[in-house]
Length: 172
Image: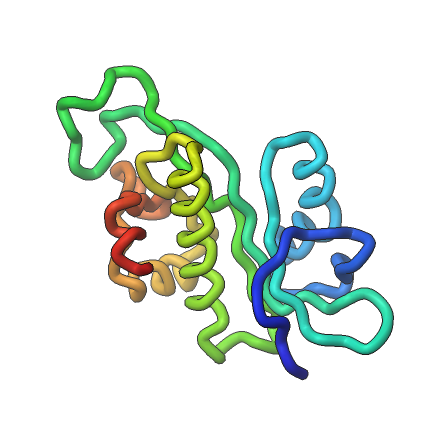
């Protein structure tokens, strides 16, 4: 099945939320039950890449969710003494999932790069953000992010990662 040309904002009227399966129940459940509601509440935004379909709701091949967050300066990998002592703004990569039908085809990397570019675009348009933070679900996912070569542990917990906006800018 052919994929759409770009990621678009999630729309429950157009996209098949319940048909998505990435093999991780928490990510499937978030998309089908909470993504639209959280968007309506202004808590986060979810972008989807769909399959092209002739009729019915469009199947989702991959998605990511971004939200605003803050981190303490002390948690940052390279502490910048010029930063304030109060929490600094970041973009939270809250969710990222790829349908089991597309795993192993580099769609995860494409989705991650698109999520980071969207975060950078939001920062460039005025959303204050020092970088992107994400929490890793499991060891396999951690290896995926480590393989990308740009993420640093945010704290002493290797499951919480950070990438500065300057590094993301180099992707463009």
